[in-house]
Length: 318
Length: 258
Ligand SMILES: Cc1cc2nc3c(=O)[nH]c(=O)nc-3n(C[C@H](O)[C@H](O)[C@H](O)COP(=O)(O)OP(=O)(O)OC[C@H]3O[C@@H](n4cnc5c(N)ncnc54)[C@H](O)[C@@H]3O)c2cc1C
Ligand SMILES: Nc1ncnc2c1ncn2[C@@H]1O[C@H](COP(=O)(O)O)[C@@H](O)[C@H]1O
Image (cartoon, rainbow over all chains, first blue to last red):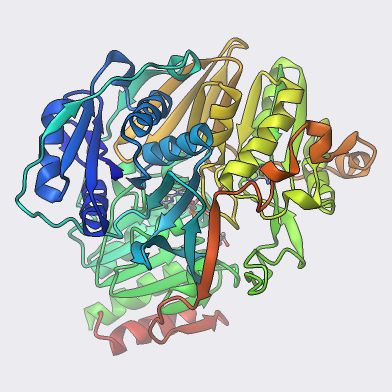
């Protein structure tokens, strides 16, 4: 049996983990696992995405979205069910759970999977590696097999089925409950949403300072677009979280994406690779962003961006 | 406070990375450097030491030549380095790597174990969680801001839903994000002094790790085959000679994006 960890927040299961569940159901008998507040109620959704069963557990240890108690719970469930595979949709939380579980069970973990298939009855993962320059087929030695699926890689399909929910039991290790959630802040979006924009001008650490974003705002205004950012500059407090593109931010697909001073890390790429045309300005000719930009410009953004803004204004005015 | 920082030698960013079709492992023979985001962990450790006193120990698993890369972190201000280098450890996956590193870290008994954001070759951003489980210590990952009073550590972590502030008692494991600080450049004095700082190379036997539990033998994942990635459309790369802005404009006009 394949267990699929269904991550949920405020009663809603993450789309990514439902995509993994749909895939798992196409590979064999799949069960959904929901942990934390409202688990029993939330788990009733699993059947609609192909699960034949769902497991739920809600205890005080699982209230905060922390990984270590979830490792305990999943380890207990793997032992009780004899599941041979546990799959996760990638997220900050899921990655820590999957890796902790790998160590706990001495089980192989393959991450960043873009797809999964059965080959001669064996599970094979498809993993783009080295900045997506090579596609690797990966396998597992022994069971259980653990897999983390790249965010957004698999689509969820509703089958309209239903599945019984079983509440299971788990004990918790002393160290697992030592980390505690002190505070949670959710930044509300302000300004125009980058998800609806046709043109996005995005900035990264190459801007050099928070003030650097003024240049991008001017270019975006000239183009009639919105401004986005990388996690590095959001975490540094240069620009709001609501504008972050990537794995832990938003997924965007504008007609035009202009990346300025962005290295092109895989976690950023997964949020913007669906863009129609990607233009990248970066002074490092080896930056990974040039591997997937349609037009790559090696140069200093501080030189190029103001000039481009001026040229766009003149062009638009004519 | 004693701080251990897990750092890794990776292929240099300028070197073309390739997987050896024979061994199906990453070719590590070329130009190498210390993993860039590990410098943020080293920097954070040095700042904590500067503020509160203590010791910063680098802990790494890699080939013997990785010591050359570790010297950069010693030059920044780390006190000493421990490298686990053993032929039998080559090809270790997450399960095996975490086992070996945990054994090396057990020996150090640091109050705080720091990790970088991700290794540029593996890009798993997962190792810390496996190590924390083996060490049976609390974990805070993706930390963009860190504080400690010597008995607890508090980190601000970005998730898909905003920021979580998480606290844990020491000893603990913390993985930092690359936004946490700006790593310093080593001073000339630091560079000169790095060579003579204690650098210890350990074998698996020194750590009491069975060779069958390490390397490919101790791994639970395999690489079955290598293939080219899906083809992508035409792309153009130009160098700015002063006319790049005009060229971008022309490109956008030509594609009817303006
Ligand atoms: C689990 C996880 C989730 C993550 N989620 C996200 C996410 O959602 N979104 C995201 O963006 N990242 C995410 N990251 C972080 C990601 O791995 C990178 O660290 C981040 O995207 C880097 O941001 P950057 O490109 O701004 O900075 P850097 O990588 O520091 O790149 C800056 C670039 O600017 C260039 N530059 C410098 N000066 C100039 C100049 N004057 N002119 C032109 N170019 C210049 C440099 O050459 C460099 O390439 C995540 C990481 C992890 C581990
Ligand atoms: N071989 C290694 N030796 C020591 N530390 C490592 C090693 N590999 C990875 N790390 C640490 O673990 C972090 C995450 O690595 P990864 O999970 O491979 O992306 C890195 O930023 C390093 O801090």
